[in-house]
Length: 331
Image 1 (cartoon, rainbow, N blue to C red):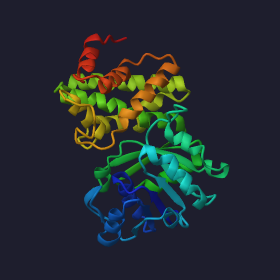
Image 2 (cartoon, rainbow, N blue to C red):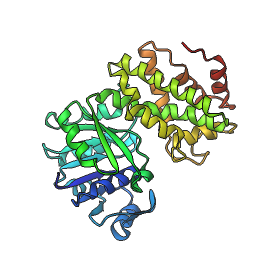
Image 3 (spheres, rainbow, N blue to C red):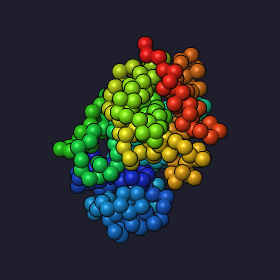
C-alpha cells in the first residue's frame, strides 16, 4: 500500500475520495485554492462548503500550495473541474516522482482534439509517468461514498498493472473498484453521460413515466456505444460502470446538476444554468463538442442532437425533446 496520497481538488468528489483513502491510515493531502475550505478541513475536520455533515479523519490535511500537497505523494488523484485540468496537471508535473501513480476523475472533451480531456491531459506527462496514468469512472455520487453506501469505481489505464494498483487503493468492504484496459472508451463514456443526463432530466421535468425514461436511457447507451466504436474504443464500455452505471446515477439522481438542468429547462424562461440556480453543468459545454465528434465520424445520433437543440433553443427549450420522442423510430 502507498505511504501517502494527494488529492488535487477539494470539491465534493475529491473530499469523498480522500475519506476512502484515509482509511489506510496514511497521510492524505488535499490541494485547495479556497482559503475557507482549507481552514475548515484543517481546523474543523470538515468540508462544509462541499460535503456538509461529514466528519473527516485527522490524517486528512488541506494545503494552499500544490507543492506542499504533492510532497512525497505516492498516489495523486486529479479531482478538478474540466476547465482546470490541464492547468493543474501542468503545475503538478514538477513535483511528481517517476513512480507516482496518477488517477483522474475529471470528465469532459477537448475542444481542439475532440478526445476525452483525461486522455489529452495524459499527453502532458513525461514519458516515464504516462505508464502510471489512470482514469477513474463509474457511478460515484460523493455524498453516497462519503456516507459509506455501497458504491463502485472503474479504473482504466493503458497499463493493466497501474490500473490494478490504483484499484487496490480504493477497494474495500463498501467501495469496490474494477479495472479496464479501455482508457479511451472510459474517457468518452465519462463525458457523454453528462449530455445524456440532461435528456433524462427533461423526462423528469415533463413528468414522463418510467417507460419513457427507460426508452431514453436505452437510446443513450446505444448512441454512446456507436460513438465509442467509431472512435476506436471498445463498444462494450458503454455498458460498463463508466457507461451505463454512471449514466444511471447522473441521469436519475437528485444530486446531479446535469439532470437537474434538464429538469429545470422544461418551461424555463432562460437556458442559463446560473439563472436557474446551478453552477457548472458539464454537459452543456460537452454537448457541442460531442456533436462535432459525431459529425467527424458521420454518425447520426438523434438524442445527442436533440440535447444540443434543447440547450440552444430560443425559448420552449423542451420542445425539441418532445419532437424527438414523436419522431423516434426504433431499428
